[in-house]
Amino acid sequence: MLLDDFKTRYQTLQKSVEADFLKDPDSVESLVLARSDGIDVLLKDIWQTFEIDSELCLAAVGGFGRGELHLYSDIDLLILIPNGTHEQYQKGVSKFLTFLWDVGLEVGHATRDINDCAIEIDDLSVVTNLLESRLLVGKNALFLKMKSMIKASNWSSQSFLVEKQKEQHNRHLNYSNTAYNLEPNLKESPGGLRDIQTVAWVAKWYFDVNLLSDLVDKSYLSRHEYDLLKQGQLFLWKVRFA
Image (tube, rainbow, N blue to C red; front, side):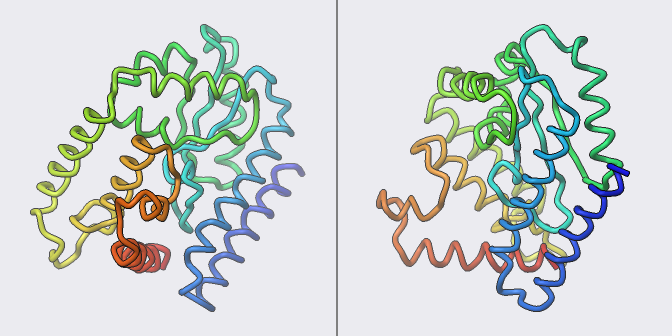
């Protein structure tokens, strides 16, 4: 059966990545990227199997949009549809998503048209999500139209930075403003993964770069600062992956 074939492929990928990590935890960076690449291929094949209308597109967002997928991370997806077609495509999209869940994929999803994006883009979490999105399969022109809306939105570089700083401050307060809790939250506590991602989001907005190392080239981080940041990130990744 088709479902069984995709289940087997997914389970094989999971077991392979997990086994490789147990053999060599220091390989976590390549494994996080490899799992993302493997899920890319799986999703594209499922999308094409369903013969989704060529006017739609499927995009990765969140950590998946960055090309980073830990072993049991949610796979965050955005399905973009032409304006005013929610009712037309609702049934087909629902079948596609149900199939993903049946395969065993832990999927988070949103279905939006361009008008939806325009309305919701004033929300900080939405614009951040769209900022790091990447096209997986489908109509490139629709995806590019969505991406072009981001810089044309009401967000300036300064306002984005200020709101991200506020978001970080409030997040730290929720975790007692310390990295020394008995059980710190790997993502949300001060010094956690979300702080590193915040640096990346601001860099993406200001310079349209995808790598923290690009900040060294632009003289916003010294090589030593970058190495420390990367070292901390890899340590947190190993703990999370385990």
